[in-house]
Image (cartoon, rainbow, N blue to C red; front, side, top):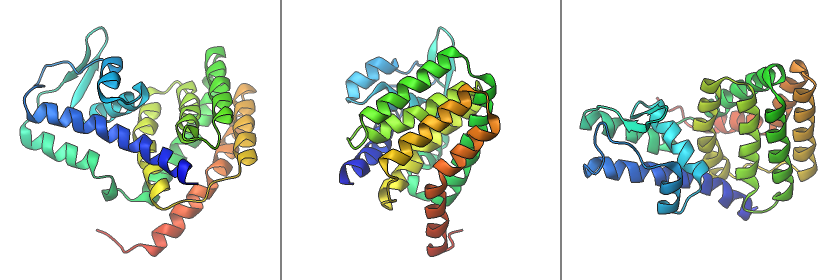
Length: 239
């Protein structure tokens, strides 16, 4: 259990490591408006994190308007005043400000719709990516790589929907959900159930079964949803 919790925590902590690096670069004027952020590969090597963590961090930065990605030009820092930058980074980095139940609700809505669209829009390349991610998740189940591999499988489903906005939103919020998952020690689902549900989801998407895919996702995330609703009832009403 401790290993799984550490993996969930690492996934979010490493994203914060990238965000803090960019924040420091901006505050020290080593990065200014119009400058290009380091390439994902170079920054991952500099900070000792995976390219996936860098990609999630860059997605967050773009979602909040701090950077803009241009084809052939890379990811460019936008023009913002210092007080705007401070406010946006405060929102991005203070994960505890977000309501866990709300994050889970949004994740469920997005993942159910992503599964439906994936069953309609997937191509052979998407199916191959899903299959590979599913096999990697099975291979690394019970290790420190379990949570990142599971995260990647769900991302392959989101990408198969061929809706980049939906995929980006899931990429942004899921690490925050996982951090709460670790913080409150949500009980893990048995290995055989997780792997069976992954296979069922893959099969539904492969067969173009929209309703089946949506149903599998709802059931797959039901434990997390039930926990978030119970947790919400036990927390003070923060306004």
